[in-house]
Length: 133
Image (cartoon, helix red, strand yellow):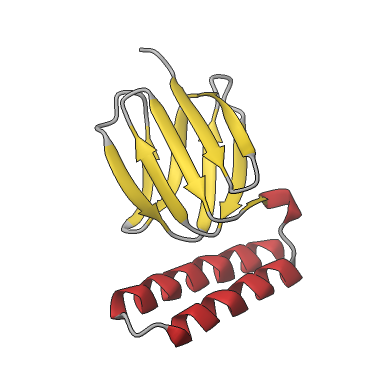
């Protein structure tokens, strides 16, 4: 089976573009793994880790603050609000992101948006906990 082309794009630049074996996305309804031949979808992304595995089994990880992904049988295009390499995540950066999401949550009157914010905060707290190990 042919590979899958993945592209991770932030407003500033193309962060990654290349052939991969699979992509794990932090979808709005839960994590989802994309493989070649996947049914076409467009999905919202929560704050979380995008994990792309290439043909050799090497993985690339990046934190996305949200956005959306478009999936076809041969391509995954991820448009993220903000992208940070996992290796660059610090306690201060995570705390600032949590504070920003809490402000968005507090200013929203939409219950679905408040719930999405809560999921994003939970994911960030999990990432923060893993940094402490």
